[in-house]
Figure (cartoon, each protein chain N blue to C red):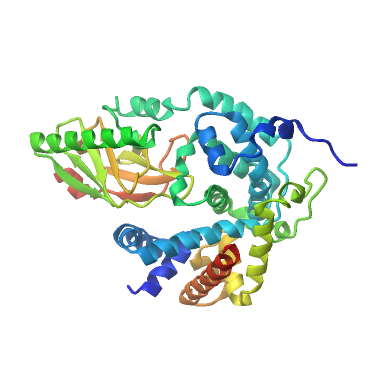
Length: 234
Length: 201
């Protein structure tokens, strides 16, 4: 694919107007090419800036006076359970999160996060050697797991950011049943999560892109998923 | 009669001079006043955009509500290293609005009416809030930039952005090859990129 075709895809992506094969091609482009191509990165950023500017063509209209009080009420309810929301959901669905699973969404000093990330990476390496674990691709991330071991890692580099205001959501699917596992965001393109489940007990691992802060009830359209054969061989 | 300051405006006095980044930082720490100030700055733009896309006040209110609540619940979704807060937040509103209208196909018929919607009582055009701000100036530049596009490019851009239509749907509706939709879209985006970058320099 030449750069002109790539930039056509990036224009459609920035406008959120791609579907089917074009959407899949854009996803691949964002993972395989854009992170390493300064020209495409600049183009994408510029197109995203253009789409944000386009919003200003809409006439501003004062929202109804009831909107802010409604937000305040819900913010009050939310503030009390804001941080634990992910962990509670995980605890209810796949037992407990081990250690720092989901750390990419937590706040705190950047240096501290990097320290945690390094420690977690070391843990993953140890886990891999100790359990002879294998890697199963799930889009740009990989599931690092060993059948029969109730622990696994989700790891990837050069992972593109989701759309603004969205997060990636990890699900475990068996047949038509989906269990929410974790929300995550790449940090400098890196994703590293430790989770307490054995992927071989599920048909596949699926990643969707969902509005940040939304309640994980049912998965949306899969963005990436593990192939069942690889997961079974996992 | 000139209306007096609202409670919100009075409450935001201490925050009014802070830039968006600082407000976002404070919001991330749970400061409601920072949230209120960002709402004051972007509420009308967000609601106006949502109204233009959805064509229905209740849906527009839900879109603006969901976007602001998402900001409060997951402020870390905005990464200052990746661009301005305004870019992030209005993109968030746009994405929510597009998701909404794609879910609510039946609303499509109302969009044309909505695109010409005149503000009604209680929906004062909020230029007073933004006229003196950067957004007001930028709005003028964006509208001027749009007039530089050839009509066929502007058409595909507006169908995609303001009506949330996919490139496949646009090709079907206009009865043109999808390759032409892609070409016109990219040409429009590149033209706007050039004009708007020049304006901001």
